[in-house]
Image (tube, rainbow, N blue to C red; front, side, top):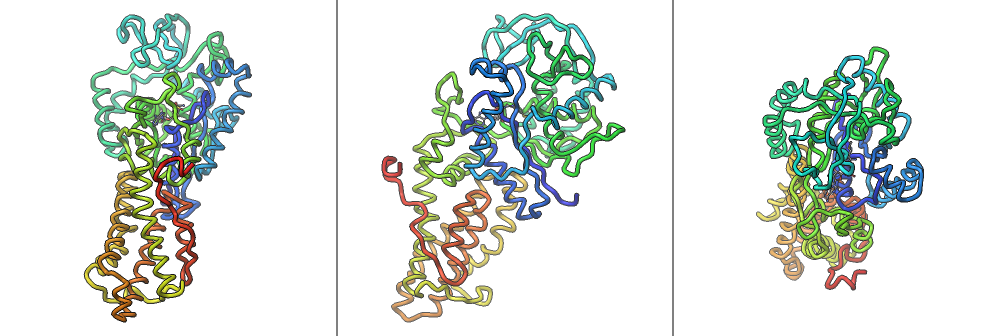
Length: 505
Ligand code: MSP
């Protein structure tokens, strides 16, 4: 396919309800997918999300809920789909790891790698962390405590299957070094390279004996074992969009993925295990893996055990869908951690949305209503000579979407600074109104100037709405509907200020 864009999100564990961290990745992916659809056409963009439904955590959560794992997953998946519907997430496909189309490809991958000798059987003795589903060797741990989650480890000894990660370490280091865009942002690339420099990779244990874990995909060459949940889940990125042929060659019109969006905590699985798995299968790695930061609550990570998990639905009910989307994409540069609080949302709401954007739209519509009875003067902006400020705006109209927003989004995935560029423009227009003082133009009978001025502002608003559409789809639509082409349809102010939260709820 000539120019296409295949974007993915992680597959979310369905052992608990979705929280704001999950919604962050999907809103970011949705914004990019919408933006790219506009550039490449709908049929050249594929946006995949879904759920990770196997493994110990799921088995345990289902048990606690008194349900069979599949029944539990079927119930939980509805919460994720419901949330994505509410947040306007325009995914093209939703994959569940318990679907047949996925299981079939996972077993095929296992079969190919086993035949090739990249998966082998060995006796495993070591320490296991059940909540993290991670094995540790004696030298990696202290006091029998998990180095990641600090919970007690279990000593185990069993026969398992291993994937030869170690064999491919030199290839991976070369690959990362020679592909500057493979891991982003740059700080994460450096982190992975230094990890690989300091550590000799050990082969990855990719099976669990059935007596310890029954909820997983059976290994085709050893039905007594199920597949390790990470090895299973990563394969979704290819199982959703392609097939292996009779010569074990993978075919897909979408692969390689253009972008895997993930959180920083799952970078190692994506930047180490996954490219090595693909390389062993003779499949090209994804073009870019971007790891974003975390949303923290009062500087600490959200977690069920701390009881500080924020529900996206609650935030949307309080502030509205597009306000929530705007806040997440605007408040923190993509890649860094941010502090989530309702006070911070209210500040963004009042400053950026009510004062800047809402005000620009409302006062312009009011002027059109007052001075031109709701009809927008129809002039060709290109042919008009404005004063300096007007000319600056005219110039900016030309570059805003084709250059400024594009660079920020397509090259750097920097939502926050793309929005900043749009806001610079909004503020420029607000300042233009204040400096021009249109009521004086009317008083001095400068009707042509007034017409040109209004015409320019209407165009600015249309352009702002166009650029905002991937970030705030419903708001953009409502602005475009209100401003119209010839006749306006003025509605209520888009974002009435929040003076106290009670007033809004
Ligand atoms: N199932 C695995 C992913 C498999 S991908 C083949 C998983 N699931 S998860 O539900 O635990 O996490 C999914 C994503 O949510 C991760 O990218 C993680 O970084 C992100 N977040 C979880 N908490 C977060 C915040 N507090 N803030 C931002 N994102 C965070 O891992």
